[in-house]
Image 1 (cartoon, chains in turn brown, purple):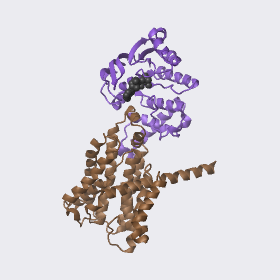
Image 2 (cartoon, chains in turn green, yellow; image 1 turned 180 degrees about the vertical axis):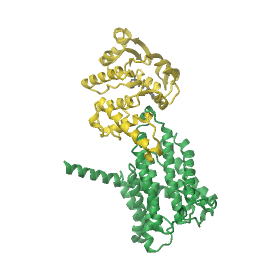
Image 3 (tube, helix red, strand yellow; image 1 turned 60 degrees about the vertical axis):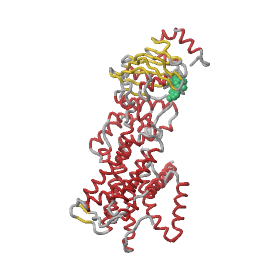
Image 4 (cartoon, protein in one colour; image 1 turned 45 degrees about the vertical axis):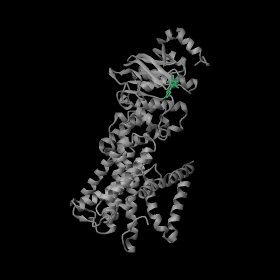
Length: 300
Length: 255
Ligand SMILES: Nc1ncnc2c1ncn2[C@@H]1O[C@H](COP(=O)(O)OP(=O)(O)O)[C@@H](O)[C@H]1O
Ligand SMILES: [Mg+2]
């Protein structure tokens, strides 16, 4: 329903879901850092995801670059796009950034539609993931690689968040006035975290393209940006674990709801609405707080 | 160390500051006093770069800082606290101090994410330094509490600690005693004097509490309705007619 799932045997059905969960989680942890730590909102994350997918596909297919190099180039392009978007709009306050990112996502979608290979119908035969002559042929291999990259990015994110840059981002969320007084470069920090989240989205987009081998602009819409936002909010924006958990749940949910047949969209919407209403802080923060209070009570 | 020259600032129709000049000598413990609404906080905000003055100039350690960003001014060694507490409420006490260490350290996104060896040593150094600062402001036992959970007096101390973490040569304190009880105010006074004499930090203290100011400061500037009405040593200020009238004109003369 949400993704054009490639035709697969039942065996690899679970693996496919694992791959999509992992890909979504990569975008989601970037969005968590942006929203939860730095307090910025992006409604255009699918734009960077799309740039990652298209740039990496075109570079490897038409220009014959190795896939890994294509992915890195795509990440650089996304990073530059993030600077161009963020530099002017971050000076604006409040909801302007959200609106600017929304516009950005739409512009990328239009560009892919008009100028992307194959236009609105997209293009295929994108080279499979490969590194150093080793081509990933089975979905299981792809799943390992996707979750491996996710793990590395997770470690990178946690390291960063627990050190100087991460504290600065959380401080930004707390009081910009105080950040200024402490000598923090507020605008520069916001641009950097925006670039970081764009690069994560780009890497995920590239992985997606090289895995499904066929992409079209319809995968990179506002709908997808909102879905990503939902993952982060559901899982909890204050920790990157929230992004991971939210991404897995939102990716698996439509599949488990297939039992409801044509009512699945309705049930899906209902579950999301209810959880946003009743799990406002997000699943991971709520669960960790529960566990914490249980431990405290036991020790007391 | 700090030269304030002919500063004026108008908000809407309000003349918050009118042609105010004064200077803060290196090593001094100077005070800026005046009744509520006299323009003291406005002066602090202009000095620290939060907004520019309409007229006049500020120089700090020989360089003009009038149009610099607050961050640039902070990096030159000027730090401050806020009358209305501006802590990072959802961060711990220790983390608040660590943010103060920001300009004294250099690990960026990539280095920190990859946990390069220098990041680890830098983190350890900053942590040790921050714990030392916490001990000096009497908050060593509260390192892991959320800043927002501290009582007001400790929040004010934490703001001072965070400012100290930037290793300033000039520290601006905007009404650090506001909301403190008599004992807390006395301890605060002792600490400010210690910072001035032991750490050799020049201090510009904005304060409402006349007793505190008279007891600890070495030179005083008095503002009233945005104008400088007097400046000099505490003993002179205490005898100054204009100052007495300005303060007695207030509803609560003890302020
Ligand atoms: N940002 C602002 N916008 C509008 N008016 C302000 C602002 N800051 C201060 N004022 C006004 O300027 C005058 C001086 O205020 P302030 O500097 O806060 O005085 P003090 O700190 O001495 O009590 C007051 O009349 C106040 O209302
Ligand atoms: Mg004030």
